[in-house]
Image 1 (cartoon, rainbow, N blue to C red):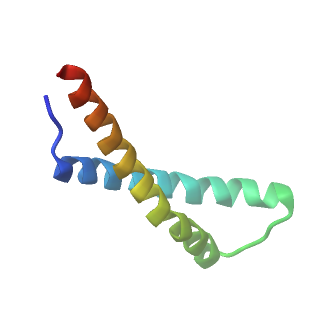
Image 2: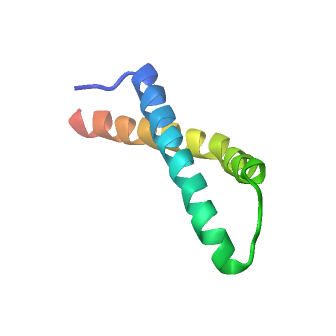
Length: 74
């Protein structure tokens, strides 16, 4: 069954949202181990800096694999 572009985008957004929450939690735990002290606002900003890249990566990879699946089915 083919995945639509819209559903690819929805999947990528959900993946990035879950990843963002996990990244913030990980930063809060791991940063102090390396002597990096930041506040919540900095953690959120650092996380947001990567959201766009993660979203684009997830969407483009999904579309690539969908194209490969369709090409292989012919």
